[in-house]
Length: 109
Length: 131
Image (tube, rainbow over all chains, first blue to last red; front, side, top):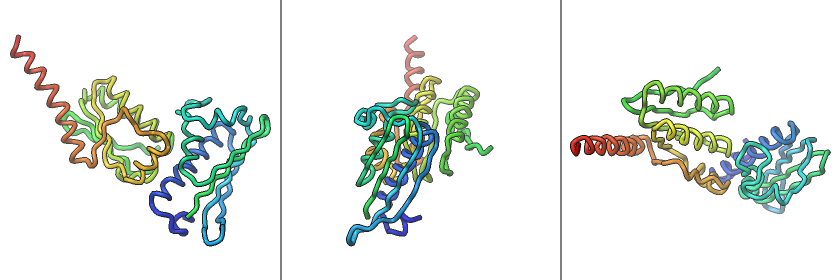
C-alpha cells in the first residue's frame, strides 16, 4: 500500500489505517455511505497521504461536541472522530446539516 | 460463512484470531464463545491476537464485550499477543481496555488463567476443610 511505499514506520501505518477504519465506519453508519479518495501530497521535501471522506448524510449539528471523547449518537463509544484526530497529523472536518460531512486527514512521513 | 475456531483445553477455551476481523465475524465469535463457555462450563478464555495488525474501536469494543460476557458466565478472560504498534494505536485512540487482563504471549496467558482458576479451586477446598 501507499503507506508502506512512502516508508511510514509500522506504528505510523497502524495509526493511519486505524484512523481510516474509524472514519470509514463513521461515513457508513452516520453518513449512510459515501466516497473516500486517497492521494499522495507533498509539502517541500515531506510527503504524506491525504484521505478525504465525503458523505451526503444528515450532517453534524455540533462539531465541537462530536469531537469530544465519549460523545456518540450511535452505538459506539464515541471515539471515532476524536480518536482518529489523535492518530493523524492534520484533521479537518466540514459539515452542513442536511447536506453531509467531509472529513480530511493527512499523515506526513 | 467463516467462523473463528474455538479450541477446548481442559477448563479453558482458546481462541486464536488470525484473520482481520470484519463485523459479522466478530459478532459470530461472541455468540459462539458464550455458547461454548456455557456448554463446557469453562472457567477461562484465552484470546490470542498476535496476528492482528489492526484493532479499531469496533474490534476493541468487541473484545471488551467478550471479556464482560465471559465474566458474567463465571469465566476469566486473558487477551494475549497484542502487537506493540496496536497497543500504541489503541491507547492513543482512547481505548486502554481497562476491563481486560492481558499477557504478552499465550504461554504467560495460560499461566495467568491457571493461576486464577487454581486460586479459586484452592479457596473452595479451603472452605471445605474448615467445614
